[in-house]
Length: 200
Image (cartoon, helix red, strand yellow):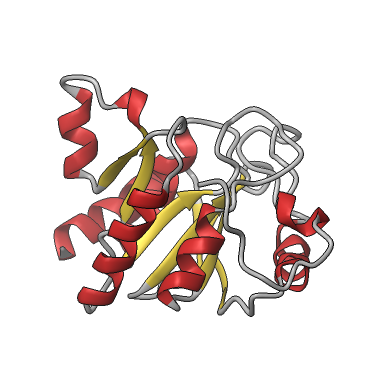
């Protein structure tokens, strides 16, 4: 772990990325805006620098041989976008409750393409486990990456997302303009005081 942490810090410096914040030992790390395949690499280095070994949700299509073995060794968990996601959420909840240290990384945009909403899986998992979420980011214009505030979700979706939107308002990703809108579809429902129950 000390060697990996030193290596991660060295790579970030060599790539001219400035790390800010300190990673929590337990919780859900959401990364945004997701505009490049390099986002998860930079995020992983940020967490490694703080001696954290996270699990990372990655689309199943990338787990081809031999890349799949590498991704699993790095903590990758394959996700199937065509499935309901309920089974995956249940497994993650069980792991989070049984382990002293559990950090899960989720790219909330769900895609590098610009969309008008985020995927709500992070919200459902956080509410189901009681784990806090840490707002992680990559900002290309300032070459800054790291961790913002850690917060517990209240169940009031719109109020929680207002806090999250305020934080990401000046974060641009590696490729500015490609990030998705920090908004959940559930915010448009008649009431948003219940945790999302649909998409992963």
